[in-house]
Length: 266
Picture 1: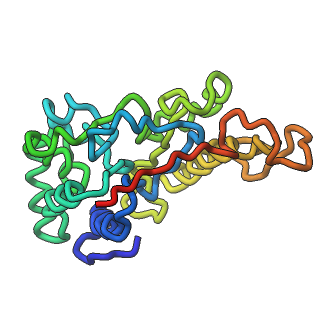
Picture 2: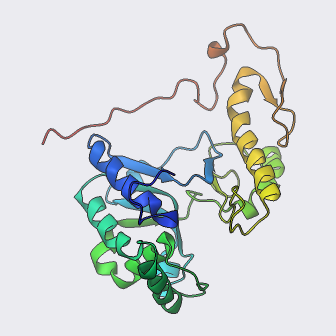
Picture 3: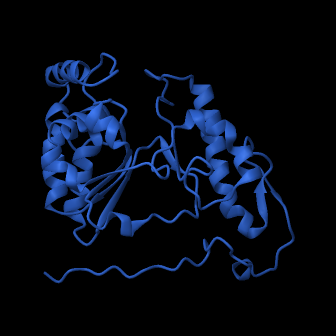
């Protein structure tokens, strides 16, 4: 990722970019951030927007793990929804102080390891900083934060990718949860080969499977599918009309019903 702020590198590069995007696009109500190691794997899932009408920040997580246990993996900041407005800018400002690389980040990491449950010793990261911020300032931020766990806004790849064939056999797109994850997130994979928790070969292989799992949901509309989740090659599974856009679209992916966004005139 190109850096907008040289001090906010690594884990923290997203924060200045998100701020820039929010300010550059005031017409956007929600920004959906996705880390570069995450991908959509349920193309038919509908986000329950009405559930978040009183919330400004939606992350995958559990209230008890964040507020009661102060567990460093009580939430995930790799895929989240942030409502555009002054509140978002304020929480970004409150989130950022542990981010500057060097001594500040190293010392902040010691604080996070001491204060958060089960956190290993390493420099401050954005996820731990958010857990710490919410756990220590719940009265200030908590009312506008929604920790979502009814579907996989973030789905850890290690418990998902080997089950894709089982999902295809038993379930269908649109569920968004463990039966058919909305997002598969390759936490711990570093394709560049530096400081990864898993081998590059394993990560790339499973990333291909995840991509093909999601891609099949689109290809099947046109009568094609990947030969297997491990293959980039496709095969025809039915003879389709010469007007593929007229085929029966059970998932609503070809002609989605878009809802008009009401933009405030003030």
